[in-house]
Length: 211
Image (cartoon, rainbow, N blue to C red):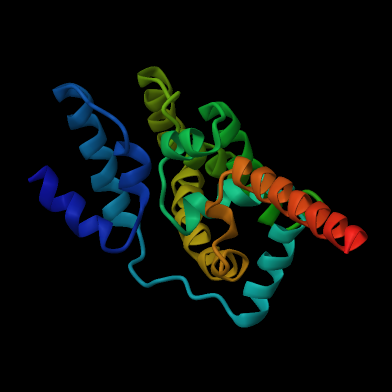
């Protein structure tokens, strides 16, 4: 029963990945999370979020203004669907660094507020939950806190569902930024290639000087 519900849900949303990725739940935790997923499945729209070309270009420009490392972490997650643990291992950093980079990337893409906008604050909270629940550092008590946060206000559930839509909208600008595959290269590869290039240039200059 649980698996069939998750399979149906996964065709349209990635929220179950946020909840279950890299987790081993007890029976009681699994039952609680099943109830949460039932609620999300019942209330979630099923149509995909399709951004316009103008929207894609807007998010691409916002992402390009981010530090290179933040862009790399974001692309490894959004394009390559790597877990935070795998990204941390690839880049030789800790998982908390990955979480910070992802939070910065998503918050930076959210439009600036027009005056006092309470819905924006709720969306930012939802995005932080969306990021943190994928982290291996998320604890059982924090997952319970998340469920309480969802139950506290109908706007919280709507914002979390919007976070999923927002995540999918960012695939198009991410595909443009990561088209060359640069984000898959380890930092050492850049340094090594630079050193080799400098060495070869030095050898060529020396050879010309003696020829």
